[in-house]
Length: 307
Image (cartoon, rainbow, N blue to C red):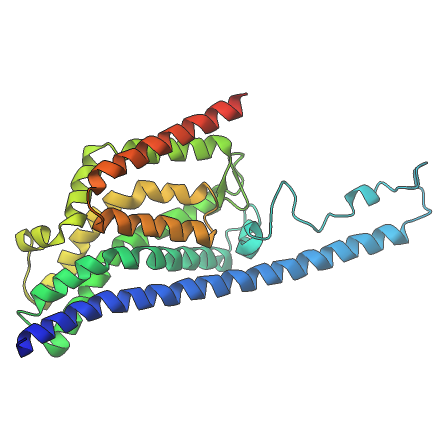
């Protein structure tokens, strides 16, 4: 193997390994962040529950006592606990659960969470394209110029997903008061979940999905036909690739709300699907089977809700 071939292999290896390592770090960060927030919320809820119980005990024997020995306050002894089926997972958003709270802290925390989640989910899916770009760019540049080109290519790619992240984060905040979403806007109710499932399923059959998926599955063809040399061309090429990637996956992102936008296991499953769709054979065919399954699931949810 020549020294040049060894260098190209190293470049490809690095551009696959680094995004995967960063993604792993982001998953750990998200897990730690959510665990810490859940612990804080648990302490707050426990404190609220204790206060409610103390006030109820102090009120025993007052006019609020009923014939059965229970007080009116006693029926609300769990005021400090989450209601409407809300769980600790749903409380992981902390202050973002408060309806109408658009403070800078809440908005910043929400958007930061979504940006982290999006990066963790999409970095593995873009690694193969990054490797292909690195192989081509390494024929023109080496050393620091090549590194700058890779960074700019990634920045161009991720800026589109950053916009999507901000849009989803603001949507979640706006849905906190909606009757169709619960847990601070992170979990869709039956009707909204059915709509999201059907929309994602039908999108699998559209021409836009087909075109974007072909691009994502054959990045070399795209790069050769849209190539821009040098550092000045790296960002536009990455940005254009990001458009196709968003077009391929963005409707599927709505499924994050079906089982909870903050459920790490569900995020990981969707991320794995994105990777599989880009690298496994015959994705154009089994992707349509997934579409049928999603539409059937949505229709079944609608039927169950109507009964």
